[in-house]
Structures are given as C-alpha cells and as structure tokens.
Amino acid sequence: MERKELLMIALIGILLLATAIQTIQLVSLSSAKVVVSSSPSSSAPSSSGASQSVPTNLQSLPSMVGGC
Image (spheres, one colour):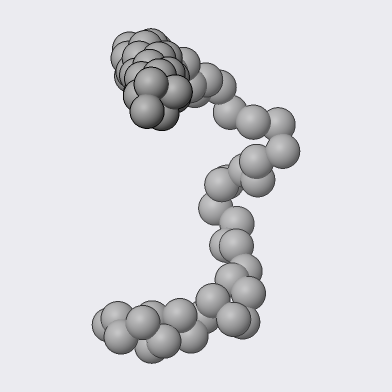
C-alpha cells in the first residue's frame, strides 16, 4: 500500500510541475508584443487603377454562402 501512495504522490507532483511550467509559458506568451511591419511588400501588386481579375470559383462565392 505504501508503494501505491508514493506513486500517486509522485504523479501528482509531476502534474503540478507541468501545470506550473505551462502557466509560466502562457503568461510570457500573452505578455509578448507582436511587431507588424507596415512597409509595402515588393511582391504585392500595385493598385494603380488596374482592375484585378477574380478567379471563377470565387465569383459565385456570395451565392454559395447565402450572401447578397
């Protein structure tokens, strides 16, 4: 009986340790700042009045989802 109790205490300790580590990681993740660059990408198409073509499978999208 002593061995089962010791094993249960060890497993609970491991679970508590894993929970503490995940809590620390979650707090550090939520406090991290995300930096997004606002510079235009060189591969982005220029919007100088040129109309962009829409693929045919996207042209019927509003009717597929019940939109106007």
